[in-house]
Length: 459
Image (cartoon, rainbow, N blue to C red):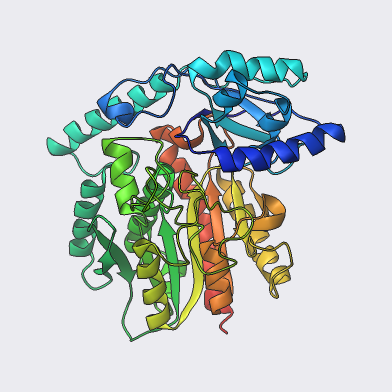
């Protein structure tokens, strides 16, 4: 069995637990196969101070095989009292696909005994992947601080390091200054906490030419996504006039890149809670903040794979496009009117996906999208041998409603894709910085193939 990492999230999972337990009971009755992996730590819930303001002691990492939070629920379908309470604090990093595939979750140390007892009671095997998550977080933070010190002392921008929001904004200004005839920075609106949302536009002229959209970091804790976006933006600018393919591409189409699609969440991962996923909007009547910005789009909104619970990491929000970060992108795409590709970059799992997520029915252009995707991952794999899977969201992972590429596809943008970058769970969201450039460079080969296909197949 393949293994992964697990950590802990905030509470408010009663609604999801009830659904999971119903599923679990039915699966146990049918003799479903299950398997598990755990990570533990000492706090009873995710601390508001995160890894910057107070130390969390994380322990072993457990993984389960199952659907959503349901595989572990299946292992403890008969659990109650302390056992059931312990399961409220599990943070599922990798959403389950089926009872035959692994799920990555984070477990508070105080809940380890209860969780492992449930697993043992149902003969569910598990493996510890990360014995002390906090140690990884401390190493990540120390490395970032050392990199910042070097950059302040006159070193150039390090594309192989993670950077805070303000540093990325400053670097964007530098990129524009270095390539004034090619790159411009545009503010498309403000976030909930009034941070600017900047898009880098790569264009050699013309008004509303065919365009390609790319966003990174819609889920704030997926740091390799934002870092890959930064590297890619620099690559595009540097290769224009040097690489014939990039030159031809930008002489034909414009490229828009939103490097920080969830700026408030990203800032919060640096200041308070490294594991924060959602936006930072206030949910009236709930102590839990934020909306999953990739469940907030008007594409099967509120359907399967999205939660109505404000405390869930998959909370879809009050209504479609309720999140200003989503609304800003929607308004730009609509007003432009000539986007031909929409690419959203996430982490992790090593997947390249296309619509649909909110339904398992095939998209009208399924054959072409699948062909383009498979050719793209062949290019990607040729560099470092990294293996990706290709398919529709619903069929390759799980049904998920309200996603961005479903909305863009329904809006008429045929070439709509979503990447899930490295890895497959060894580090999960805490991918070491030394993997940024290998990840970005291989992803670029896939991105370029998609962009070239868009250029060569106008519609």
